[in-house]
Amino acid sequence: MKKQSKLFMAFFRVGLLGYGGGPSSIPLVHKEVVEKYKWLTSDEFSDILALGNALPGPVATKMAGYIGYRVGGITGMFNALIATVVPTIILMILLLTSLNAYKDEPWVNGMAEAVVPVVAVMLFVLTWGFIKKSGKSKLGWGWSSVLILISLVLLEGINLHPAILIFVLLVGALLKKNPPAEKT
Image 1: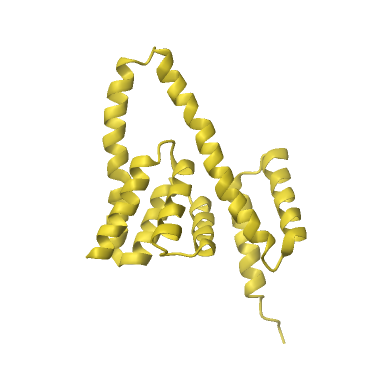
Image 2: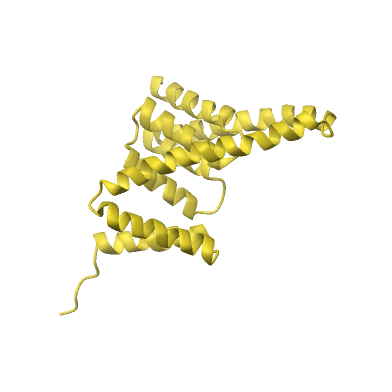
């Protein structure tokens, strides 16, 4: 029961503080499940994040469901999902009601615009952590840099959808780990 309450509180904080959608929630989930409770390693988290990004739908709820299941079974899955969604529902009702009354005020527009750089910094810090880890991996800095550069060109240069790139990289990693059997 104690694990379930910790699971609920971890994802409740994420749901409550993750203003800005999935991208702003990802560093908060990382902080809770990797750094605070140590339910996952950083590598496991990055795998779950990659899988969550490759699947359709909101990344925060997919991660909450998977991590909740992994930590606390079916009950943990529903617990984490409810904890992630309920604060958002309550806050959206309160915020939309309040903001609708003041929608033409300059401070409302300023508040909405101030969220963007904060989320960008949070995502940069998380990304930089992953880049540092990849440089220390078996690939080393050279291959990691090449893969980052190729990804950047594919995503920004030719506007490849991120899910396609993630899927291709996951398939490549799986094939490298489990090469097809040779025919005899």
